[in-house]
Image (cartoon, rainbow, N blue to C red; front, side, top):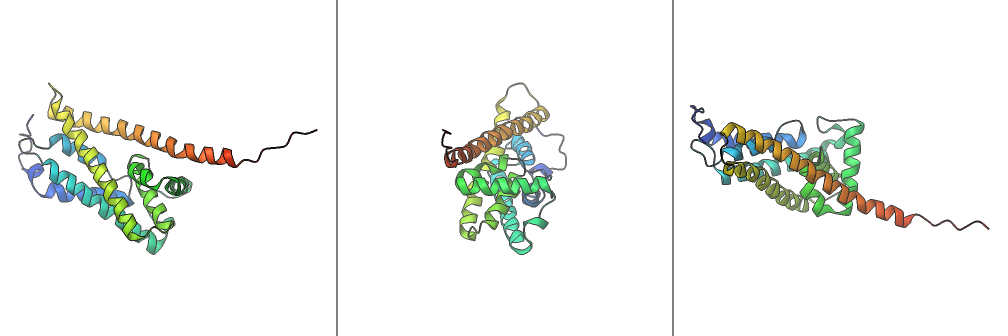
Length: 213
């Protein structure tokens, strides 16, 4: 596979890392902005002639992710969560409520998997801020989550390079589709696991009714 079609050399320039990181940062506040798919596609081109390099891609995504998380943290502090983000109304409120509940139950697991849940990144960042998490603890959560997310996105793209007999364009499409499906599965499984604990707590707290004579 080669990238002869890129006659501008843009994919091998340093700007690809800055622009990709900016997409990830913006997606923290504006979920419709693509982030994972951008780096999955770039990962499918990593190391090819005229393409980006894998390690700078991971670092660029990590920096963009942490910058976006911290931006959300401070915007929520300044303006409150009701004015933040492109998705407002009952759906966003339900997402924030669910994120707050899951964050309280299993904070480490939820922060790691929230990237794969629809509205999960924005909602988890808002929930952590509203819950009063200190900036230092929030930064640690963000760093670990960003590292896992970045390696996941770029790694899936790189793996498609080892599929024999496919073109660069097909590899990019396969990588994006596979990442979406896998991300959806991770989100569903993690949401089920986190909500199961709530169901157990609710069933355990239900008072037993005494039998009638």
